[in-house]
Image (cartoon, rainbow, N blue to C red):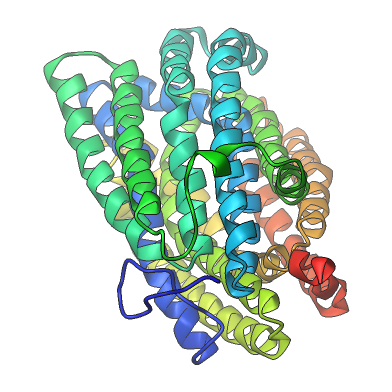
Length: 465
């Protein structure tokens, strides 16, 4: 049996009891703070290189991003699958399967990390060349990526182990550890770049070291949670059934992230054609966008854990009520963020650069993007519920349709139709209009599939009953 200590902030939290909206908010707030701290990793990199090196260095960090995301999606898939399995087994009070699931996650992550460490440095430069990365920044991009790939174990284990903690309902522990690592990352960024003159690779090294620290702290916490599961050598042995279930649940989510990354790469090639000023503006917008999207991602993850635990406990009534509460809260927060960005976004852009033209260009694009956050709030919450139930295929197909089938053709189509003497490759707004269109359609399709209700029969504990 799984036991809990609900009065402790650091204990697993049972989300099958109490008012749904309160449990969702209690879980979401630490996760939101943690997601904001996670975003500081990349944002601190951008601020440091933009201020201490220059706009070209800022463009280099941004151009490396899509390649980095593409080769790390495997870890995202494992983390999502782990969170679903852990939450359902925890909700069902199944200590044996919970222990084997966590052990399998740790071992699979080790295998995946070694794979990325070998493959990543071999393909980074060819991919950058394929993307038409400007020659002035390609060496910086390559060095940045290679350091990340060689140190990918820290990134992967933090994401996997924090996913396990969230599946257990403990979003507070991962928050504390991440805040420590974030502070360390900012300090090392400044030391490596400003003091040691390591340039763009220095910020990558700082992030890798900080991620290793956060991963070690998560592992230490899990080893101390023996009241809920067993984490010993026998449990680390790969279990065939748990591995297959983990892959079955995680592969669609990993594929979804891969789809996003491929679309980012395709659109990045278009962005690169607009020149270094637009590339730098895109980096600034994506950093601000990263913070603006954090509440949506946090509520989506909270809904996955909430749905998983309650489906494991056979409490569909709580799942339905919690979904209504979660969507209302997420939409309210997203609307507030949209208004804030429209009114005060230029102050955020000034953090990255003192170039007035770059700030004006960034805000022009940000105004297009900002109105899509409400749509993403709906998509993330409803997709989170479906994933928590074990239906990871539906969100994948929706992402495929809206991202590959809609966003990429729309971006290139608008760019082609807006070519002129002033904009020989098209207007740069095409990148952000296409993203807004895909977000809006994604929310509509997700709502339709959620209401169909077929996701309710996907729970792994229901199948094993």
